[in-house]
Amino acid sequence: MNMNRQIFAATALAITTLFGAAGAHAASPAGFTNIKQINAGELNVGYVDAGPATGPVVILLHGWPYDINSYVDVVPKLTAQGYRVIVPHLRGYGTTRFLDAKAIRNGEPAALATDVIALMDALKIDQATLAGYDWGARTADIVAALWPERVKGLVSVSGYLIGSQEAGKQPLPPAAELQWWYQFYFATERGRVGYEKNHHDFAKLIWKLASPEWKFDDATYERSAVALDNPDHAAVTVYNYRWRLGLEPGEVKYAGLEAKLAASPGISVPTITLEGDANGAPHPEPATYAKRFTGKYKHELITGGIGHNLPQEAPEAFANAVIEVGRL
Image 1 (tube, rainbow, N blue to C red):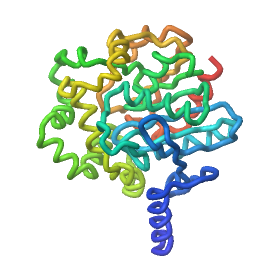
Image 2: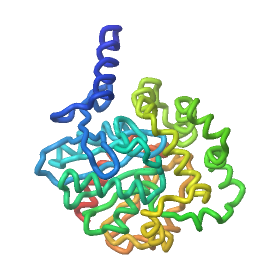
Image 3: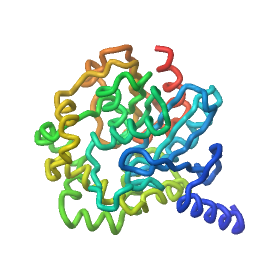
Image 4: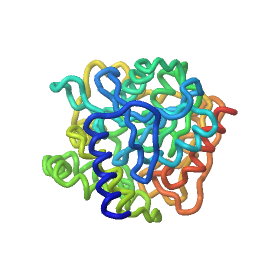
């Protein structure tokens, strides 16, 4: 890319980040460059809206510490099949902002799930196929468990990820605890300040550890790292991991939902779970969660050195799973 094109791409990205945009989605080497904005629940959500307006809806949910560009190669594969695809920035990412400056920057799982329902309501979407990985998979799992009437099908990387504070109190084997090193780091004030200060390099390290065989280049990383400059990103991240350890109580308004989730509810909607053969992040074995999916169900192992960010590392397989789950 020559200097003029670099300047143009950077300017376009900055304008979109600051102001959002309207109209049809456009993908480019710079990633998603046409971000819409809508008030939904507690948030003003930045999101991609691609494909025919009357097509069956798919909502793609990203993980931590990634962004909507995990789906930059998945979206055109789905829109080519006639799907309308919504890809929102989660709270604390990209152009998504809290409407109330005084709102708690809550990252607990129930909060993220209600964000999805609020977005669907704001966009007047009655039902959608949900698909995601990491935080996105957990969020999709929760919506499918608590609001199954809103979910046509589910694609969940690493399967059933619904947990609770009570479950988080249980110690793990040493090797498993080691994988969660960053959770313990975030439990400290040093970790909170460290992540606020060093989130750019911190996230890049997580990418490498979680996907040890994925040879992403600097441009690919920088395209997503911009989303982590959201002013609420560090606060939402730290809240999430502290909540898991019981160090943040959570908000009372979500207590009823969290109580339901603590019972490990089954998921009855048609589901395909995926796993990469080189996932370096903490993840459960498929045999431990298969029984949680009580409806039509299928599990697929995606081979070829595929790590944690499965939709970006294996977009064809991920898109095919979204299409296939609608036929189960």
